[in-house]
Length: 174
Image 1 (cartoon, rainbow, N blue to C red):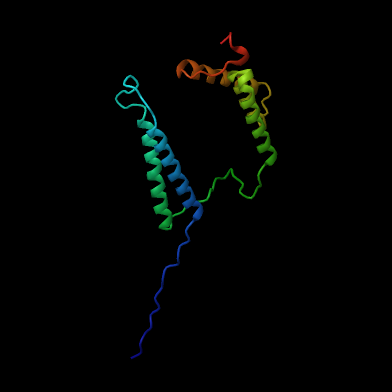
Image 2: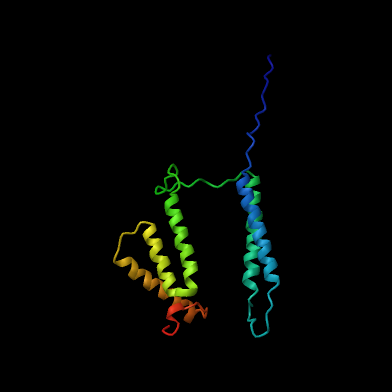
């Protein structure tokens, strides 16, 4: 009788994705910072209700820590995120540096204009500029929609949420 030799097959060693481990580490750091910052919140008896203002930061920080640990465990066990397979994304196409630069300029211009022009006007310029840079060609509707969105956001934040935003040149009007 002949002896059969059986080779022991070992499963291929799975590569650890260090980018995903890095994301896990970032989540861990952010969660710890949120918890540390939340521990410094001071509240009075009038501010605390059944839950209190510290509950949400503590919950967010704890969930960030749990997510970081679960992601790290998954990555170390061989799990990995799937690549984007959307049909509207061309992964072979390069970065549109011109569009990106124009968007950065729109955001910087908005941040510089808010103290002077006020949030409603600067916000409208932000929405209109972003629409134009991203390719919208509705030349008549874009400014109208931008004004509605800019002033609508201003009114929601100031009246409904009680957050004071600068009105700028419209200080006496709004």
